[in-house]
Image 1 (spheres, rainbow, N blue to C red):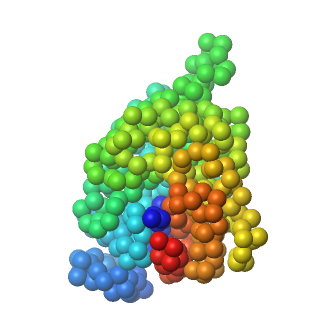
Image 2: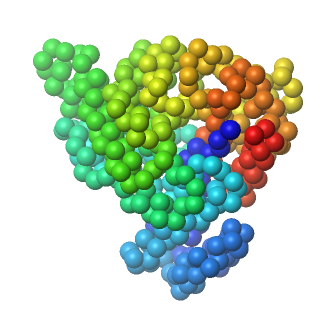
Length: 372
């Protein structure tokens, strides 16, 4: 049976964003909260939120308690959103989080933020530098996991930014300077990765202890340095080995040359269940086997046991994939790797509106139902 999930991020409702930017809530924010509560059949679960929004119309300064309630309800809305769509593995679309890099780094001692850098889609994050030994300050996904677990109706997935990406997106003023002083110029990277891997392992263990069924390791930087692919794989192996019987693990890598991962990544076979790549973004919108050019990398899965995380939705367009197109992509993949498939969008849908995301995901779920 094919499992469905959404990769991680959904856009945050305006009534979730504005209180944290000290912007006043408006009638439109209220109308959106009411509209989606009705659409998701959760009006009886969200009466408190509606009252908070009504009370604070025109007010840019909500109390800390009210802000925490806002986060709780945005999490509830997002979980019910995915449950109503029919997704199998459910998450809240990062409603508790600010950004996938800055959020964890803020909770790790030893870093100093240096300034903003641009990621894709005109999004920015604050880049940090390691200036002393990294030490976990707080189990930063614990409250999030506990909150979602308290009201979720399906299996819970929690995404975690992986150690390689956290290291690669940071400056290193600590290990690099020490190794350089001692005449070593190559060991600093491995030391930094080892320490961050152990920190992420602690975070993952805590997520497992709090009831997550499925853990996704997000590693967008994994293939950005071809000569470090083996080092990336070794880091993930050391981070996860011994935990594979306690939870189910996935690695999500997006928008890159995936072929350079092989054969190195096969070291994770048996530890990581799913490798989720982006396919739809580089594929044709036409039906037919000859048009499945975005799925050529599937041949690399023939000699291993990984479940293929099959991206079937392009997250960079509002154009909605038809059920027929999604089904065609899935059947093409099944001809190559059999039923070792999980189906999801290419990446998170945070750049799309909830309306577009709902249409895309609904068609995805319906296409899978036609096959299961």
